[in-house]
Image (cartoon, rainbow, N blue to C red):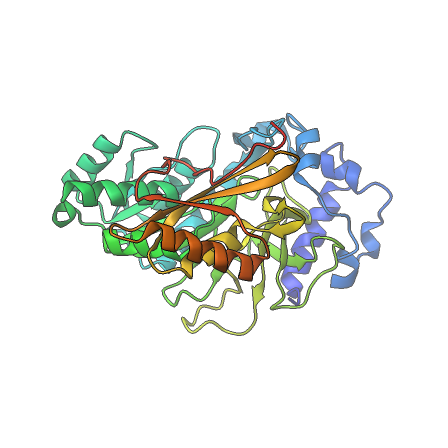
Length: 411
């Protein structure tokens, strides 16, 4: 995508501000003459930054303003190592709220809605981000946080919540519980704003149909404000992102070369006006593509496609590379199979074995479905897993993100 002149000016301003400082980026930009960056091509020669770089800056090496300007920090979970600490100025918090309010507006949510927020609060950016945007919009926030499904459903009925904000896993858990209790007529939900994990079409349809609501994919990551930097519109034709706050490139995950619009690759983000912890060419590891042309909804904001997965999600079994999105696609092609699955990979008798557990609808011929899923898997992905069908509800559900792939080869 061609960089707008104002975007280039904003990036140049950020680079000038960071160069020569003792910050993480000040050190990373050492030896680079910022004055010589005169074009988009020059910008694309700048080094990428990775999550591992940000971890190395722990605790406050990313802070790019005097400490007295910092009003808040957020952090990645740190489950895979040292957490990343992201400092925010008051303007950063306000800018994030503006972007999030836009997301709600894009989804047709207004200040007359009652928004039930189920993602976690604390150092994580989710719950507080949903609330910040809600208050900026002027809607009623119902800040439940995660868990306590009994109370969630009670409040949903009593408060007549019209919008649910959740991970797809928890939205499905709530949908199943409401269905099980036969209380759908007491639920007033109209829309769901879903984020934090990728989800397949079958899962989307189950949540949509069981709750009877419109669903919207919200995009974001802790390092870049948090959720709220983009959302899909009513035409469901990709995720609009706010290009007055972020600049997106799509690069080849292997070579790092910038790809033309329309080609699938890794999302790389540069923040344009972020003060506390700006990011320059940050590799997200999320896979998508820039959708060329104008959206049928009429929005001027550019679009990326729904996130297809992550570069680090790739599995390799018996020499075959595959992504969870491909497994979901296979399952979606088999009638009678439900949306939920789990993969368990083991090393047995000197070879890799992939066990694929799939929930199937009531009354289905399980042996026949196992055979169909195995055949479809082989034809589409190139290897045959051991397929085990189970009843709907048997596989684990989560209030956060559901762990669908368990690799026991290296345990």
